[in-house]
Length: 214
Image (spheres, helix red, strand yellow):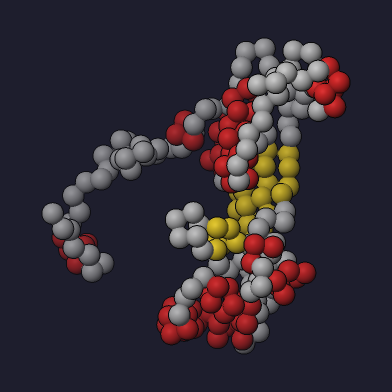
């Protein structure tokens, strides 16, 4: 790697002894990678952040993102997120350009909660379904009730949800959500305190129209 001179390092906001870390690739890969490095560095002994309580409100998320497997556009949040009013005209011609009315609250690099404004225009909702490759018959079968409700005049609405377990984790300085959850589950979905999973009464399965397959 070619070393930067003092002038080049200063132009990048650095000083003698600093390390310049550069990565290349799509934002979906590079941003999480650099975020992981930054969060790890804040945990090192002797590192004192200049700001102890940093809050951030993030807006203008993309409405769609590319699915690496299929190469198709998929919702970046969920298919009922309203597009930015200025970008509605680009949904079919340039989906990747569309912003969503989706927002996140972040504290010290950790997502505290997220939410969105929902679609209330049935024509916009149908366009979203069509762009996702859902056939017209399936749209009506699965979401006809929603489109009919929107056509009747649904008022503007949205929501926001905070993760209280994550907030408790951050307030306690705990390294994992499992340290603050009353009945934590393992990565194998086993609840050690409850002894779950366990056998279920056949009558309960019958009532739910479920069957256990060996």
